Length: 135
Image 1: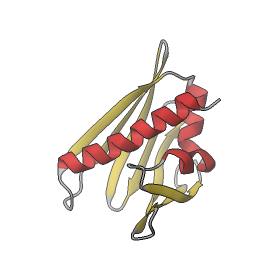
Image 2: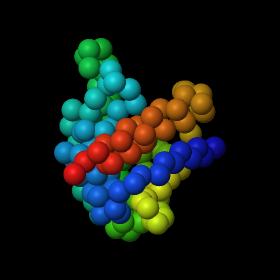
Image 3: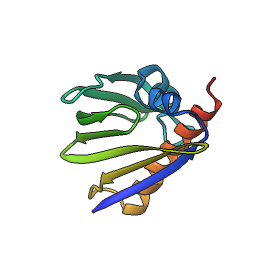
Image 4: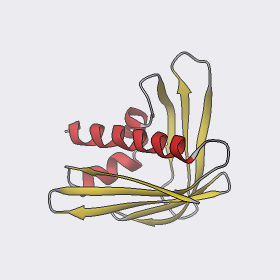
């Protein structure tokens, strides 16, 4: 099963792409809730390149590495990657006043579809807020 989340961001494509692929920016927006944060991020933005983000509860109670390998990179348009035996794609669709970012990913069995959709959507909403506020 595949799950899709999306948002529209009122910002130029270069800013949206940059915020999604720059480690220092990723650390600012990559969390599903206020009690989580990303403490470390690396990006090797090329086919076969690795990415990793360390996500941790702010109280130190839990953390994990979200990591994978890029399988397709089309600047300002598309990222595809594999992670933990699953795949995902991130589309960057320019529309008049900004960019629609659409993420489609393989569901996993541990959490409900609703939980996964809500978690990924929440992170994407944080990304949109960060990107629109950034100068």
